[in-house]
Every structure is written in structure tokens, then in C-alpha cells.
Image (cartoon, rainbow, N blue to C red; front, side, top):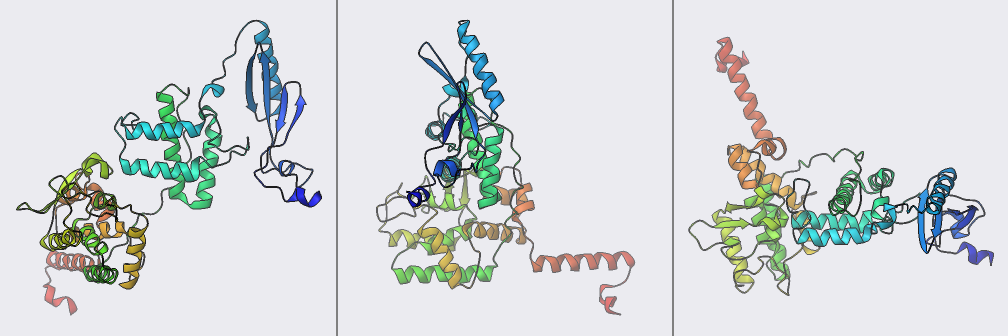
Length: 421
């Protein structure tokens, strides 16, 4: 009996006991009392006050026993006077139901962002992952329940901040910020629909992760492209070679590349000027919807890819699986990039690295910032391009030094050739 008690699952039923009239003490599912692994509490219990009158039940949770007893007494007195207390915490749906409803509404364009615009599909895909893997499974220490089971109106500042801190400590700052954004979007939609009475709480978010500044040179890009084509030839397919060529040649996002379709509405290779049309649903912002001119080398690679795929009809995905469905960024695409980067002797190369590299080449080539920003899909006229994507290399540093030396010698009247004297 004793050994069986200690083998009980940590997901046991929460331990409860009555500690006052109409008030019970409830412990976490992971508490030693709930798991029957010890006789002493190992959590911070909370108190549930329950009042019933004329077939109606009213229940509320409190952090302290005194608050629970006080609420139970005042509620009982109100019922005796014929007053019906309102408890919005019980009327709101569970967070799980609200999250599922939000995702469906957002995909139909009914749930909007804070700026009252529709959500991009890539944003919703990230929200769905954050909700499914981090937000909904998170256990609220006060109730011992997952956030999925709690009423949406019960997600207060303390519960939401606990989620952010837990994810930041366990999985990093970026995923903590993504979890907070997903939770706020769900609660904001519930507030707009009148299902909860308060706006999402303002949280203390961890600082954003450092900017990704990894780039590759033109020579390294050639090695990477050769490795991608070699793997395609070895596996008798056409995938990584044309994909890497497109990413390097346009600087597009991986979601934009994988969302491409053949034909005038997507990848138009038959017109005099070959264009890549990025659709709004495959990119992050309104400015991301654009047409990108393609160079001849990229066009040749994509034409060979279409022939290798059996000349799919217009409207079919450019990069698809055996059933003709558009590929996802995970799986064969992500791990394929890792393999060909390793074969080329490169490390830490991702699809976004190729976007940064293309932007750096634009800066090194002297392309004006507004034109480069339009090519990359930015709406700020080039400020983000210069601040984030343009990474000057050694050549640019030497050019800056030479220009500075020439200016100093011209100002002093000393010929530049005499600087070594």
C-alpha cells in the first residue's frame, strides 16, 4: 500500500478539505498531499468559497482564507435579501475555448489586431504554436489547473506574469515574448466580444533577444548553392537548389518563398521582366505584398525546377510535397538547409541568414535605402534596412578608413602619397 501510494502520478486529483463553512482548501495537483507522497503540504493552497441558494451556485477562489470567508458571508447575506450577486469569472468560457474561437475568427478576418487590421497567416501560425505548446499547458500555481482549464476572466496579471517568467526561464526570452503576445491577442478578442470585462494585463516582458547579424559572403553563398544542388542530384529531386537560389537572389522571407504559386499571380517567369509576386497572406505586413524582379540566374534555376517537377499548372505551389501541397518551413526544408550548410562548411545558416546576406549585398552595391527597403518589403523608407539588415563588412570598413585618411590629408594640405613620411 505504501509503495503504491508513492507511485501515483503527479497529475493526481487535487487534495481538498473543508476548513470553514462554505469554504474549502484546495491544493495543487503536484502537491505532496495530492500525490500522497507525504503528509505535509508542498504547495501554496488556495481557498474556494461556495454558496448555493434556490438551485443556483456561486463560487470563487481566493488566495487567503479570510477573503474566502468574507466573500461567502457577504454573498449569503445578499441572497437572503433577494439580491443575485454577479460573478463574471464563472460566466467567461475556459481559455482553451476562447483560444480556439480566436484562431478561427482571426483566419476568417473577424478578429483584428490592435491597429484593427487582419492578422497575417504567418502570425497566426506562430500564435497557434505558442498557445498549444506553452500557454494552454502552463499550470497556474494558485489553482493547480492549467490555463486551458481556467475561465478566461480568471487570467489576471499574476497568472499571466507567471506564464511569461516560466517560459523565459525554461525556453528563452523570444518564446516568452511570443507566448505573451499570443495570450494577449486571445484575451483582447474576448474583451472585444464582451466575454470578459477587462483588457489583457500589462506584463513585464524580458528584453528582446539580440538581433541576428549573421551573414555569408558571395563566395560562401556559391558554396552553399553548390552543396544544395549536389544534395538534390544525390536524392534525385528538385528542392533545395532552387529554394536557396530564390532566397539568395531576392532576400525574401521563407514564408514568402514557400507560399509562392506558379503563374502571373505568383512566380511569373514568362513575361519580359520575370517577377516574384508576394501575396499578402504569405507575408508579415501590408508592405510585404510586393513584386520582386528576378535576375537571370535565379530565373534559370526556377525554370529548371518547373521542368523537373513535371511542369505544374499555374496556381500550383512552387515548392510542394508528393501530394502537391505547399511545404512547411519545418521538416525537410529546415533540416535540409542545415545539411547543405554543413556540407558547405558553414554553421548557423538559416533562411533568415540568407535574407540578411542579400540585404548586406544591396548595401555594399550602393543600392539606395528606399529601393532596398521596397525590395525587402519594409514600409519605413529604409530606416529598418539601415539599422538591422545592412551589415558592413571588411571591404566597407577599409573604404571608410581610406576616405577618412583622404579627408584629413586634404584638410591639412599634405599630399596623400606623403603620409608614410
